Length: 187
Image 1 (cartoon, rainbow, N blue to C red):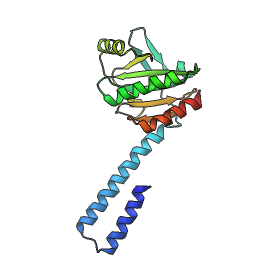
Image 2: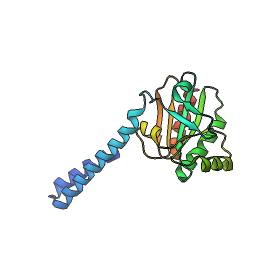
Image 3: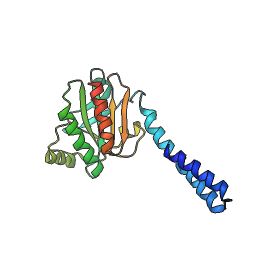
Image 4: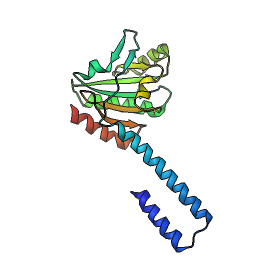
């Protein structure tokens, strides 16, 4: 909304002060930038309410795979795609541990999904950090791409039955309240 107000003010200024080429260049830059931002927001909101793609993720202990369809028949699922080398990811993982400790529900399954890292390193890392949420691997990033993302961290809540109820790329302290609210609404 603020961007539209700035655009309107800029257009008024252009007409009052007999615009030059610089103003037109700035105007087109603004339009392109505004359009790109709108597409990014639209991409996040497109996933919400749609069916989650079926996926399988490898357990780090080598005991097999978790399959989303099996879990989503009886439970809601919270996924955080993360990397041990990304500070925003580690903040999101820490926040999810706090949320899980505060919201005790048997209807929700939490998973930390590690991207592109070696299994042996990941075992050491998880033991060192003492994670209480199960860590699974998306070694080649296939599940992440199924959710139309290539960035981490990504937080996704899939409601029982397989509909995506929450989707957020990146880490934001402000967005944390929305995540808590959504998780409480599906308990």
